[in-house]
Image (cartoon, rainbow, N blue to C red; front, side):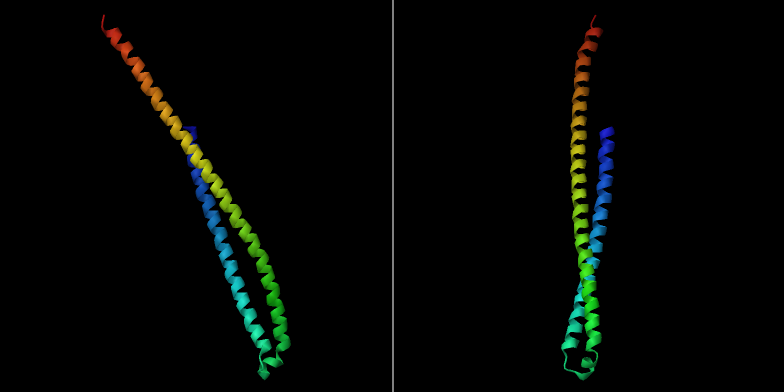
Length: 137
């Protein structure tokens, strides 16, 4: 019975761990989208810097500063993204490990239940001839 509780507890832990994994994946997806937005902004700024339009040339210094800030932001997001990728991998590994432990516990429970059924059958079989011998005299 204690082993059955163990597999049920492990199953709940697997469910929680998978939820944590999905949360980490969601955070990673948001960071990836944000990096893509920053990359698009950088492309727009580069186009403005290279433009021959007199209006853009007046603001080239501002564009250069903006590009520098976007570059820093992209680097920060890249670091965050690497951290989150590692976190997703770690959470997935934990979930897989817990899932394996749960399956092992369930196999052990099934084996114990089968053993107990065989013992019960043997006990009934061995007890039946003894009771029939008592009734004959």
